[in-house]
Length: 136
Image (cartoon, rainbow, N blue to C red):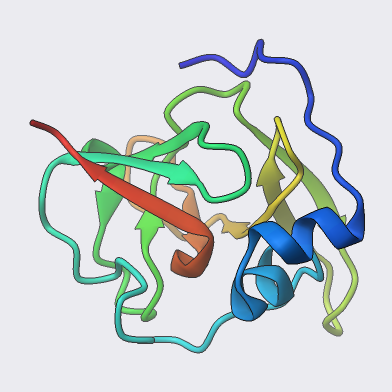
């Protein structure tokens, strides 16, 4: 799926009405859920797609998921290069690359250069902002 959809803009109030408190804290305020949070999709083994909770765009595939041991769902690439946007995050001492849904801007997590082949990338994603839809 491509991110050729129209960009979605919502007010802070609209986000608060759409998302739970934790989804809002992570997705809009760019927080991080705790590692190994029950239900965060880290242990999900079924085939399917992980969609953005903010707009429903398919961002991640079980085909690209791997067990990083970090406690967050990890992928070696997004479903399409156009669905995820990145920016530099200076919230920690060292800069990191933060990723967001390219359609609605919901914060997904961070990408690191310590992942498996073929990309060598580890997209470390907050499961609370994901809606997993198994393949039927």
